Amino acid sequence: MTPALRALLLAVAVLGASPLAAQSSKEAERKLQKLRSELKGVAQERRNLEGQRGQASRQLRDADEKVARTWRVLAQTETALQRETRAMNELQAKRDALQAGLQQQRAELASLLRAAYRIGNNAPLKLLLSQDRVADANRSLAYHRYLQRERAQRIQSLTADLTELQRVETEIVERRKALEGTRQQQKQQVATLADDRRERAATVASLDERYKDRSEREKALGQDAKALETLLANLRAAAARAEAERRAAAR
Image (cartoon, rainbow, N blue to C red; front, side, top):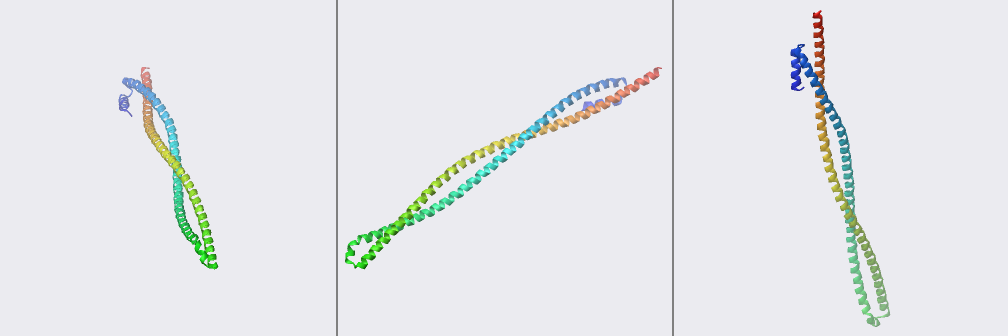
């Protein structure tokens, strides 16, 4: 209740049904009309704020859902990157093993070639050897040639495996590059959505505060209006009694 209204009620209570009470009654009616007008405006403002609060709250929920969805997608991208990293590590370990095997096969092939070369260069000496010794040398040379072919085939197979590994590694590198780009975009999107969410949350908080203020003001004005209505009713009743007493005395 405002100080002015409190003073008016006190004055009317003191004046009772005196002529000055009629003036107070008119003042009360004027104030009541003003209160009702303000109350109507405040009530309309409160209803408008209620609608704005509802819309802002829905927008905030939508922003929360967008942020959550983007975080989930980002988590999936992070998981995919981890998976590609593990695959790359496995391929690199396999490549290292293949390269070690290839190096060993090449060393063995080089050793076989040197041995075969030595056997081949000793061909003139075969004439000085017995028939059995010559046959042994030929068998040894044939065996070395077989091993050479086997080692060469093994080297060819290892080289093909390494070539395929290199191709797969290149694909993984490209996928990781694409995923890194996607992750950066998603992080930026999360940051943008989070900023938007904070702004909407601030809007909702502001509207809540204004709605609370208008609701409290509406309640206070309603109480003041009710007090004035009661006052006016009492003044009219007192005036009616005074008029009845005056007429009765005039008879």
